[in-house]
Image (cartoon, rainbow, N blue to C red):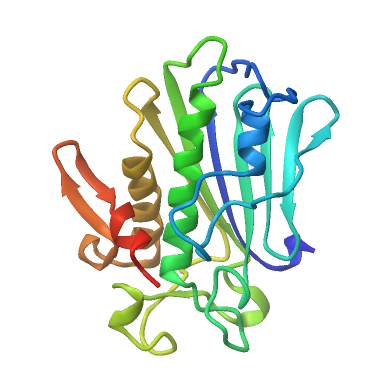
Length: 227
């Protein structure tokens, strides 16, 4: 059960509920079909579920599931939610406690999530003015073992030494951004920065970033070239 594991929950939604045009459509270019085969940065990375049929749920949302890893819901009002398990086969290093967050896995999944929402924005009947970004962590002190996040890239450290421990069992953060100027790479950085700060890291500890004229973003090109 997901509720019995460490979890990372992501959400993006309009601040005022809207309506998507093609969420329940069979057409190949519908947002439903795009969710079934979402874009990704690289082969064998940490992506949204691929080639999974979206199931209609009570006429309110569609859902894709990657068993043992994550559940993704897209609502007709434009709310997009991902629940991901943190364990050795997904968002954590392969250790016996499942307590070591894998920074590249976390960052790449968040970036794929925020990038998909750019497609969602294109499907609104009336585009929203503002959107809310949310991130939540649950069960960070599971069975007495505190979740740990290291700074720097994956190649910078031995994952089972050092790092910062989660200061509480659960946490959440909300950010409001303009939909008109939505930049998914910058949105991903904003969410990831909040996670690193919560764990007690400085800005300089955040990996896979670059500076642009519009501010700091996650460096998708750097991740895409990793093997």
